[in-house]
Every structure is written in C-alpha cells, then in structure tokens.
Image (cartoon, rainbow, N blue to C red):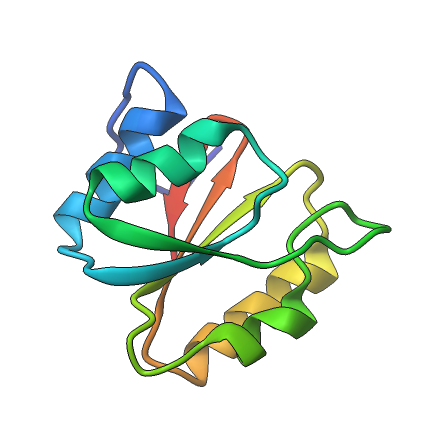
Length: 116
C-alpha cells in the first residue's frame, strides 16, 4: 500500500511531532496553523522551537499556502502542515514552495506523520 523504507509507530501525534523536530535537529521558528489541537504548538515549544501561526484557507480549512511564503525568513527551520482533508492542489503548491527553498516540510495526515 505504501512504499516506505522505514516506519515508526508512536502513541500519539504529539510524540511524532516531537520526534521529527528532535531527529532533524530543528532550531528556531516552525510555521504551522493554529487551527489544530494545542498539542501541535506545545510540541514545537517543548522542543525549544517557536511556532509561527499562519491562518487557514476558509474553503479547504488547511493552512493557507499563499501566506506561508510571506512568513518564511532566514531563521525559519520548518513548515508543519496539518490537514483535515487531503487536497491535491495544496500539496503540489507546498511541494513547489519547499523545493524552491531550503526549508523542511513535514505533514501530519490525521495521526500519520510523513517526512517529505
């Protein structure tokens, strides 16, 4: 079903987010959305990073991709994207944004954490 070389199961998404931040040795601001459970932001803070909140698109209810570029600066370490609905167009825009920059993008689809 999935073409994965490695997979790690964790008890909850909070631990998954913390593990990704720690394993990538991320430091500094991480762009995310406030339209999620508080554990997303607290996981970022727990790992000594700073959440930078970007509003959601009112139609998709996912992070507004058009606002991410404005929030990126030289200290941005990652973009944490949480999606309630998998929207292909948004995914493609995010991949293009990340490919054109040196930032780490990781996405959480419900309780599945995927590193892109």
